[in-house]
Length: 393
Image (tube, rainbow, N blue to C red; front, side, top):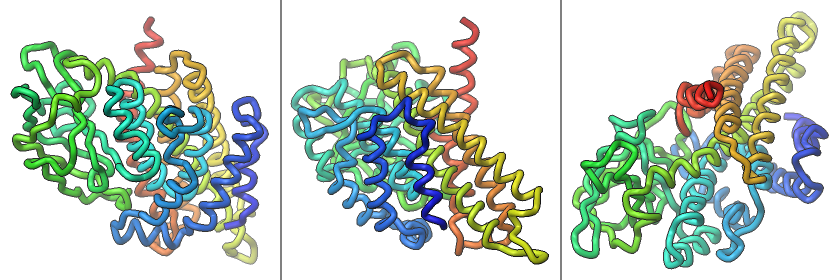
């Protein structure tokens, strides 16, 4: 593709109200690194072979990207605006990189930073920032997807340990994780949203089994089923208060939605740029197909929708960074941006015709990966329910 497209994304003047000069330079530095190390061929090969992009993740660690938003006391740097600026550019090149970052840093790292004991934070967070101990988050089950609080995986107290039995589904990055932050039911008689606790489970614990699940897209970062059969976890690895896990979980969900919206904006921009490049390069009836109004109008609509999605992501990120409530705004940003990504990938594939459907071009990967974002992180129907509650008053 034309490198000028990327430069236009990096220095967008409409982001001036949200980002500082230093954050714009940070975006440029992320772009320089990824332009060199995250080629379409490399990203495509990892996806096709279902191979973890270790080389790219290692480079991210060297660059300090996996310290973003962690507390300074544990080796962290930057705030939520840095996170958003980073994720948009990262997802432009690699959805796998941005998804892995989100699971490790935004979800589990963020939860540990807020709610874990000093012992856990001192042990886990510095290693996380240095890429020495990856993390995963286990909430969903076969019978509790959108209704996540109806989870049935249980943990019984046995002396100085919890004993866990149950199965978790759709766990991102479990194969690489040293620990899995697991939501379990610790009081079977409590109401649905009560009696839930969070345990940091070592993946080498006896009785824990991880099995990759084959998916339509996103195969560089495997999604897994995790089985717990009599898994013993020391009580010191309880994160937050006993039975208060659901309340703690909801505190980090808005943060994930902001991250996902930024990722969708970046990946969708990559799909638009690919379609635009192709339409200018491909000639039919003696002219670039871009010059046919039907095609140019499609690309105009695609770009307009991505621009709107980006603005919604940065609005929600600004509220988050300022410590303001943003449940509705983050849900709006997540569902709008992910819907846009799906539409843009679908239209981009149509513009490219058979070449868009061919594995040779990245558009087919956008088409497959975009659907993920409408489902995980809370389905878009659930996000609309959250917004509806805010409008009902």
